[in-house]
Image 1 (cartoon, rainbow, N blue to C red):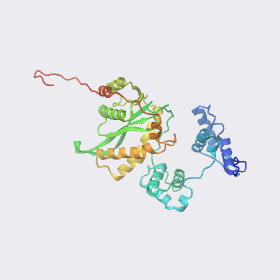
Image 2: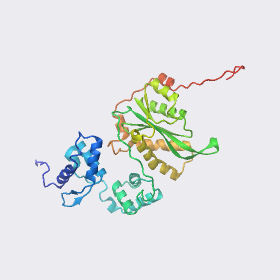
Image 3: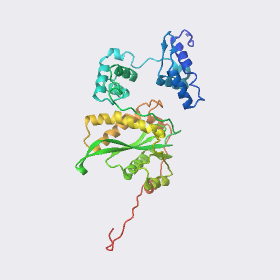
Image 4: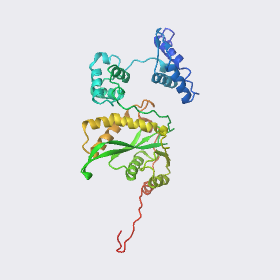
Length: 355
């Protein structure tokens, strides 16, 4: 039986792994805070480093962050170079890059990740996001050059377990035909996302942005996914009202409102909104939307087949799998649920005994 020897100094992959560790050894210290690690990584990204092949190379902050995460998750093995899934794909199919350029020109807001997903869905061929991004930049088709709006960067926070905190928001969408007003109205998406798993808990497009619509989405989400411990929302009218406050009090949900003009705690929701705009709305509006019902049908199908089942770049898991790993959700008594969402109004009784 042959003897399996551990990697030695003459192993090229081992040399690369050791080199990568030397670069990120200091910021990979688990005792550092996120701010301290960020400062160190920015300094390293501004420097050049002597690669084992004798060349001097510079690495972006994204690359260094990826190495740190790989080392913390898998040790030195995580820093060994791996064969890319798209190795040789572009060389064998150069037309893929031409199609990537056409997709970006058709819709400048399409991200490299979205274009890679489209190519994989159409041809079953994996093309790296970085390959697409580099090609588009060389062609002058990067989103900055085409005038696509940049997105903000928000601070990081993560709940410890599924359903510990849900984040709610309202996203403004396209104009949709509305028979009630004999014209079109701008659709609004009420959406709830689980902070720990990034699962889109529930969402629905509506024509009116009001308290009733927000409560309908919250009730459907609780029936489907269980009770959250906390609900984190902004100070908009659909969320800052007595009806929602009473509902959360009856169900034992802690209602938290974000501070105005301080979106640091809403980074995951902002990222989800960006994904919805870039990967769903961009294509939905491109093909056309006949009605609000059609928009909801397509959105729910996309949510269940794509959004909640794709591997999240930060967690390394699909949102659905990470949410399910927390075990059965905390259910609520149907009678208590009905009481929580019961509405009451004051009416004046006239002299003719009518309301």
